[in-house]
Image 1 (tube, rainbow, N blue to C red):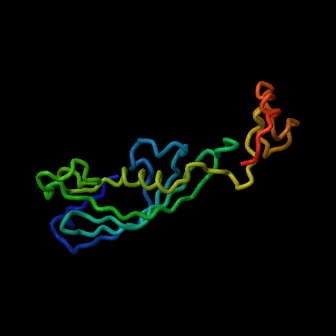
Image 2 (image 1 turned 180 degrees about the vertical axis):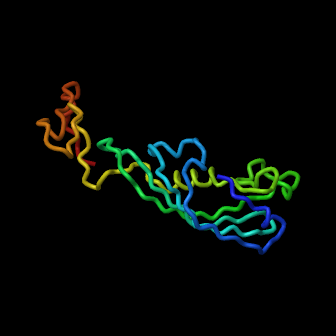
Length: 177
């Protein structure tokens, strides 16, 4: 998602506020992370773009409604996520000889816009938990038949029988540590 910044470049101290909702298609088609099935429209932006000597400072919040998969029962769940961001988009024209090769986020080559797509994806991946649950007491799937235990009892034991190949270990007399 490109945001024009022509009026801010080379004018330190200038600022602009962006408060609007945008279509998720403006962020491109790259994946949003391993647990995100899809991002629902619209994406809410409440940002301030501040011109500084080094480039453009982007700060504010991004609001997302996500469809994610429950880690236990594999059902699709809606998760609303509000992400705070503060990132400096550096001006490539001001980069000095010998500076690091990966400066982070940069103004686009023509210095007329910033691309918020990568920033938005990075923010979602950082703030979204690794394991999303549909509810805290999710029972998950039965390891024997694959039935969703949240919908009812399938008749199989909650804890599976131990593997008989390990039965000899139960007979060992190990002193407590």
